[in-house]
Structures are given as structure tokens and as C-alpha cells.
Length: 222
Image: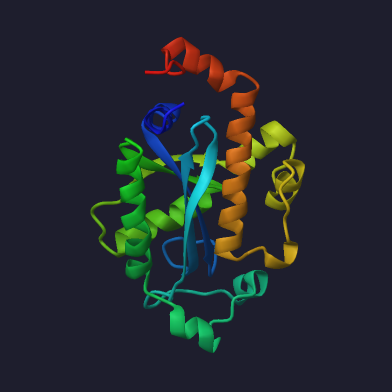
């Protein structure tokens, strides 16, 4: 299969949406009032055999927006230290973090012949809510992500592996998971990306997507 066909398959596979895996570590559960502390995204691509694979990772420490709430319980859960000197050196504003992530996402959308990104997340509604709130706060007009559609790997993991916890779903899929590294946006996003790809590719290998390709004539060489 040529690279051109692989790009066409990506555009066709999710109705012209490009799946992009996103994870955020936050200062609480309220997207309107609680801070985003870390954000990471993994773009996905497709190999010449039609398998979905992780492409590039973008990850940032984020400075809480002015007036943001940060619960101590959230810091205890994630292990994030806001007073860490290294974190202070590298942390960026919400607007800068979103800009640095949205630019390569837009390029990936164009490169794959897609029209928009669709957020993939573990318990995706949580991350999507915080992402949309940050977009509104920063008055970003060109949000590459669909405003409400998403793919939730917790639901898919429950369907395919009988596991909704990220670590357990990864292990059921044969993906190594280090609990000591969990609750870092970069680590969780990369494992979620591997899990999502594994589930999509398993469905293809079982004949689901292969059958759809044949029905649409997308498996034929040009």
C-alpha cells in the first residue's frame, strides 16, 4: 500500500477527522475555575499497512491562569509541585501551551487530508471540558479540535478488554505501564495513544475495518 493510500485511509477511517490523543493534569474538577497544570498531546498517523501508530508528542508544564483554583488534593494525587524550580523555569501560559500544540495539530490535519482533529482521551469528557474552557479563556478562534465529539479510551477499553482503568487496560493490551510514572500528562498521553492504536488495529485485524475498506474499494492499489 502506498503512502498516498495510507493518507487516504486515515482521512476515510474517522470521517475526515484526525484523532489526536490529549491528557491534562489539573488543579481540580471544575474546568471554569480550576487550573490546567500540564497538557500533552500525541498526534497519530497510519503506516502503509493501514495500522494506526503514534507520531509525535508535545508536552508542556502550564502556569495557572490568574485567579485559578488549585486544590491541594489534586497536587497530592498528581505529585505536581508548583514551587519546583525546574517547573518554574519551563512552565508556560495556557495560551502559549495551546498555541504550541495547536500548530502541529493543524499541520497534521492538512498532511493527512483531514478536516479537523478529534480528541482522544481516557475519560475524554474531562479533558475535553478543560480544553474547551482554556480555548475560551484565551480567546482562540481557530481551535483545530471538534467542539464536542471525542473518542473515550475508558469506554473502548471496557468494551474490548473489560477494563476501564488506564493501567489495567494497557496491561490487558500487552502495553507496559509504570504506575510510578502515571499522572504525568506526557506519560499518560503516550500510553493512551498506544492503547487507542492497539484497539483500532485489533478491530481492523479482526476484519471490521478491512471489510469496510473492501466495500469502499479503498484497499485496491491505484
